[in-house]
Image (cartoon, rainbow, N blue to C red):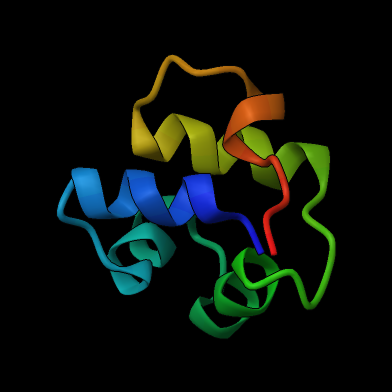
Length: 66
């Protein structure tokens, strides 16, 4: 699971639906990837980081938590 992505969503008061709309990534795909069910590609990670408008490194944003 990518807890830092979830934390940034909460900080920005965004839902996964909002993130889906901003990134163009299908909602269920985002849910599955954020929850760690499927890997996030580098391009998806960059798109998500850009949509969240955060300055933290990709490695930190997508650090896996249990």
